[in-house]
Image 1 (cartoon, rainbow over the protein chains, first blue to last red):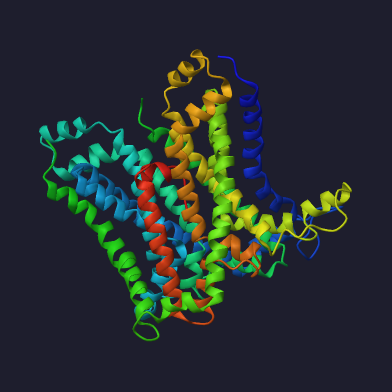
Image 2: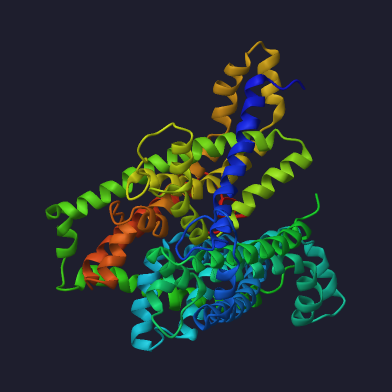
Length: 263
Length: 279
């Protein structure tokens, strides 16, 4: 089919827009290489001193570590709970199940600032403010719906007759779930887990409300750096954060491609 | 045969308990605070009538959200249209760029905009070097900067629902219009655009909803000059400790978001809207 001129122009515009969606973030790279002591662009020479600073400062290192632990534990919990729930709703598949599903997706929909107030109010009397447990619980609640969505999409492409066959052959519920269903939707589970990890790894609004001094995640430290707007180390942190996110994206993309139901 | 109902619900239970106990319960508590703190009654809500500050904040929020939604949906429509008409490999590449931009942290983007839009930022120094401007354009600490940052963040959210709607259009309808003598422009405005309406409505709603509660970009790029609801709530909670006012605003925000979400659910499934996305 012949492509009209307006459509061609639009395609050109769309490519420009897509590049512009990503390009601005790349500005952190030159800033991170500045040899000067303030946020600026390198002019004559480049320096890796702020990467050195990032990876030798106890504060930044401890933030990396804390974010990694909180991200990994909450992703693990969210993946377990979200996957079980997706399988359960898939088995029930009734109008009631769809109502429950919408309720469980609420943490994605409610503005983070409201979730932050709710968690903060809940955690103060429980003594969970500024603790690993508090942040892990909060991040698990916020990321489990992402796992639910991803795994449910995988289940939509899973042949329910395999489950019947397994049960007809005498397998118990438990065996059917672990040996038949879970292997069949494994890429979806992985995609959900990566998604959950990154959503915790990046989370800032709730974290601002429920952490103070002892738990100081990477986004929290970056937030401070951005507010102070002087130390170029924050640019180096932004580059590292971006690199890790892109790595996670690559893993997610591979898993999501495998998870897509065959057409 | 499906398994007995019970075993299905048993698997749902952990998630349900988690969301009920750690999320819905505490949110109800926030709603409760809005009518009990500092004194029982509707005093907090009465402030809406008496306080110019609150009215200004709500108005700023609605205005910024509406402008941002309009721009995001128009730009998103253009991208979705190009994507749906692209060949396989080009479409994959476009989708790849779109999803990567989804995954770049809002903090990284905000930081980059600070570097780009500041008085001596890249944009101003480039324009200056080219001789286009004589004095730096103030991009930051005003609505312009907030809008640039927010539209940039929201465009991918607008693309996905529109893209889904376009994919479900039967191409023969467009061909029929052309073969019956409709011009390209007529076919687009009278056939194609109306067919994509559910996607456009869903995209507008999802962008508007996320914008309403947006905190990071307005707080940093607005520099305290563009005060929107989320930032005001955080000031009330973290600095002035006025939980009552904050809870009242949270309640209004929550009901607004839920009402819009309900309308949206009539146009498109939630999981389609948030499919490859994250908040």
